[in-house]
Image (cartoon, rainbow, N blue to C red; front, side, top):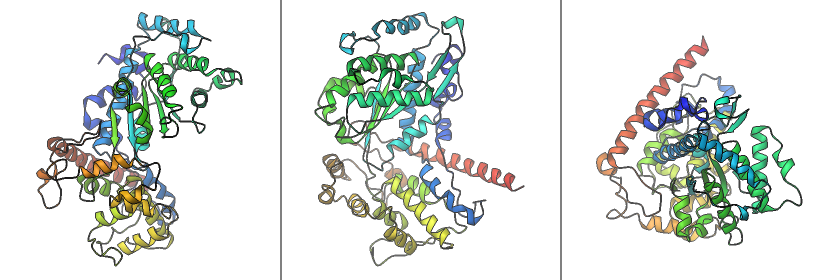
Length: 478
């Protein structure tokens, strides 16, 4: 990597740290970890004021393998994008200036360029944690950086747009997406681009060029498209047009990350060249854990999302319930209630904490959790879906139009000890960490050695974070 001191685009706080994060996984893990809820008995806030902290469970960031791998890739792409577009370089200045010659032209009239930025895809069902991972990575960086006059790179003034995140439009149109991009730029850059460029008579093909020019002028490091759903990107009416627009942006040197439901990428998968372009930065398929015995569920999600507590007593040992007579431990019980979805695990813990604080309950029990789950309006309409996900019940899941049934079926059928997955129950930790060979493109699970190193690093960093938090709480009491 080049010296960041020689590139104005990489000198701001956060941006100047990317190279260090990419070269040392421990440093990246350290900045990614976010655990605002302490362990039981360690909360310094008065009990009567703790209820307002319950929402903090949804902000916890548990650094699982993919939750480290994906931010690593996002940061790496942004870094290389800004590194490649160093404004001091004469050839970069010439390229930026040359884009002005196409102002007001149709995108069909503009030649394709040799510049090739990286595309990236993150796909997964709702609740798997896609957006949470993306947001955590982006929060490490400033979104806007102001540059004052610099004679050596020919810019009077620049508002650098490090990244821009927009949602796919509700009307599923390209013009709707273009307007969303301009409005988002106006919001973060304090500009009036949407008012100046969007007219009733505006042609989509011309508006595309305007948007690309602005993204280039502001040196956008990455464009993130959220909530790609089957009825917009996956629609046969719009998908080709959308993809051509994205390819154009890649062609102008701006990386694109598309985050969405696996069903939305069915059309894209049918074209090998498109797959190559959009997977160059990584195609990540986020899938549910195989079951409650998985190491990620028991050793990452459970301690990361469930163990933190706003109460003064730790949870009671699990007590079997008549409703679930065969379940004998907390991980399996919570798997059944949440379907193994991290979002729902955090949501349930938040609901349990709030109920306990309101009703002056001092300890969480399995009976309490089931009671809260059965009466919480946050779970009233998702119980059957969670149950079906927990039990791999394809027949029930087929009632949901936005679930990738074939992908889930194939994934679960791959759960064979002799082929894709080594069962974790009743085996040594070394055997439980055997390499898993997963069929879906982009899904890679770390080797035994990598897992052991990761767990060791996480334990050390978690201990360090706990000590720092206790130290801050002690100081705040003085």
